[in-house]
Length: 337
Image (spheres, rainbow, N blue to C red):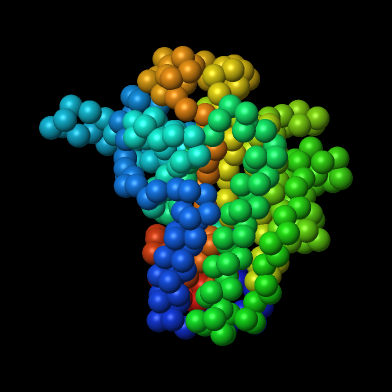
């Protein structure tokens, strides 16, 4: 989806004021339920980190961070893209134990994001991370964690509907997760784009965890980009729901079991990112000083879109939009915050 798309006959389930109240309720419900289900404690998060630490996430490896100097500190800083690496360092600093974790309210700026119904330069998500034992670095542990998160999403939908009966017009999300790999999708639809494959699959499997993102497929191309220094490309994936308003696959969360020293060493070499080995985070991980973890990000605005039946992310967050988006939404009567 590269341009603004407003479905024919679209009308929001909630008016502007009820939308604002519902967003507040949704966020409180989901935070509480997620923390309880995964044994996570809420912590404060940085808006920016020092550029020299390697803590900022590189996403697909091409996005430019918003950078600035802090003259009185003699430091250069970057606004975060996400907190995948920062969270792992925080668990080390807080001296958490196996089975314990954290979540935080992450706000970021992604200046190079393509603007459409699902993407904004402003990003808000629940970033979470949990310490695991080495024996938990396996597919079944990953799947169990995915099922837990999906259950929390479904519980949140149920409670919201009890407060706002208008939302019952939307289909009920399925708690039954289908697991599939990116290679399996490429085998099924070799001539389709990655997003087209997701749409084909998720339409018939409305709650899906798409696994193994980052490494090259048989075609020689990855399904999607993933930085080499946080997720293990063989133990990661995206939680996808079928979005009935937009009639497409809808990514809610990117997550995975994180790299250990051996995996990061290999993935840095594959990605041509050996220069990162000298950064503080990478040195500590390669020296086995950081805990083994699982973690991810869950989009706050994305979840609000899905559970409130909104067609555009600008209906649930305030951001800056191009003229084409502003015109298309105004013509359709869609109110951007």
